[in-house]
Image (cartoon, rainbow, N blue to C red; front, side, top):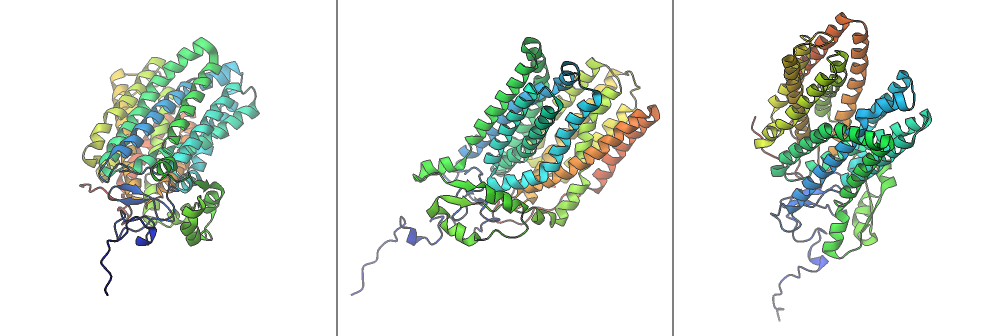
Length: 497
């Protein structure tokens, strides 16, 4: 007798050989290692590795729900606003503290400040890879914790050894923070990604403008110790907010399972290793049973083999140099404290004002936007040639500030979109780290050269400004954005050219 037909048991694990269950559509491939993959409803975990990518799960309330992506954006913006106020409040007055309160020589002050910048640039590549390995939420919380510790050391340091230690701790935290925050934004749905990054940029500019006066008020009220305490609180708040994005907690609440742990030591080994991690398949199959996830992060060597992106990173490497040198060049022109303050406020306002335009219709991903940003930066340096040392027409200085603000406001979203569209799933941090590492190396070498030229007098000053403009023009002429990598694990935006 033929047995009666029975409906398939959708609750049994045997009914679905794929451990992702019946909701996972066929034909969607997993990404690199155990990184999260892109489903039609948002980020979903790869088989067996539910949360190791540490990216938010969009559509947790339904396949079409944007609530989780919006939550990620709101939290990242809140973190950016808090830490930017804390950072700029301290850094705007750090030189005065080191020079007058601690009595350090100018060369020693330069050593402390230069060590932080140089170490942060050198660590961007491994920090980006580590972000991919342990997940951006964990890396972001670690970054904010390190920055909070660094500012605490800075506020209590009384000698050179303590100051150098604080500089290194701050550098490590900074190298981890930027790839973490931007990896989270890269993981949201394309429809929200551009607007999320625009709001992220605006929040940073608000912090840059409001931080220094807030720091001046605290400095006059309670001294440098109170000022660094504000920074500690701000970065501690950022760490707590990042932990709210920890996906394991949300997964545990939805499934009733125990929270899993990540083998961070394995993640570090995977970042530094050029060979596959042993036991990859076994760990993937056994992860859900043991409750422990062994992380295989994307290796740096894989990014270095992407020749198209490497060429792109080299050609846009001057972007950081062009953005950073205005901080030195304008004061060296001796235009006066009020004029310098006005210039930097104009730069911040112009950078923030152009963000909604960049976010609309995905404009930032268009190749000409990046070229336009580089050209604006070069034109801004040429305009500074019209300002003699000791001050000049204020309208010229304001116009130069607008051009430099447009340069930063156009190049940063363009670079973010390029990395997002080129990097394979789960490797945004490593790609971003390579880009930032090369840009930092050029910024260090170029900054040293510009400083030496300014020391030689007016002729060297003009040479430096013309040289910066030429570098911007050459970069704009040579840059070719790499095509988006064909990746079935990530939904990509269709961007008109």
